[in-house]
Amino acid sequence: MLVTLDKLFRVLLAALMALLVVSVTWQILSRYLLAVPSSWTEELARFLLVWIGILGAAYAYKVKMHLGIDLLAQSLRGRKAFLLELLVNSVVVVFAVAVMVVGGSKLVAMTWELNQISPALGIPMAFVYTVVPLSGALVCLYAAEHSVQAWREHCVGAGSSGTGRA
Image (tube, rainbow, N blue to C red; front, top):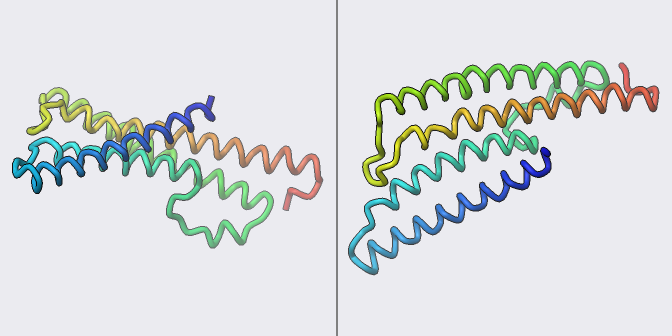
């Protein structure tokens, strides 16, 4: 199931990026060639950039390409490396749940209750902000996946070779 989710995620990010390029291109063409700038393309590009950035951060965490300092992690082996990985994943989950899922959900609920509408596109801002709790949930899912993978490598790998524990 996660493989299908990953493929869908990559396709979504690529589609959002393509839509961003089309939106910005249309803005340039309508402004300079037609001399009648489109009013909605700038706002759409801004919202797409937010979605790409936040969803892209979740995907970067999934493929372990997110910015991090790994000097300590590279120097540890065996059980200590495993425990550090579990600690890091736990801290990531706590942050993602507290800030992104809970905080983002409160933001979505508040903007929905206040009926905030984007000026140019006329869509509820709650739809735009939905990316925050969605990305937080994905980060939690990926942290769980990383923890299970670390457990398999440490416990199952150590049992078969006999050299995995330090």
